[in-house]
Length: 144
Image (cartoon, rainbow, N blue to C red):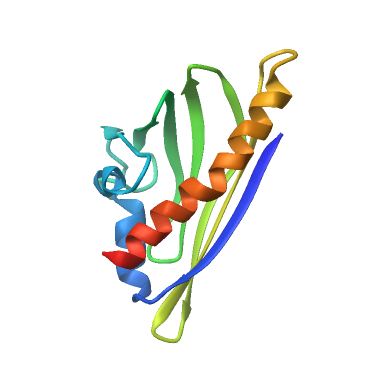
């Protein structure tokens, strides 16, 4: 199983951080993200609850559905499919908390590869990359 919890305080107002995190089009501005495409719009907002998007990072591609969207405090997602290997995604949450003039972001994800024998190895490899990937996105937001 892979699991990660990344916490970072960004010196920007909560509304700005949420806008940048929730808009798929910004993701290709961050290191490692090569593709970010909206496949289906959300019910009330373009990138809101119900939105389906694909995020590509190197050989990996994730199709994720936004399952909760509470502007500017929370966005949850579920990875519905992944390439080149299937992932069973059990948790995807991004929470934002106003802290003075800044914003604390808590990003959690968990799941596992369903491959027999090699699944645990891929879990460990992905776990090692998650922190740097999420950290890179949050650093990019802080620098915008």
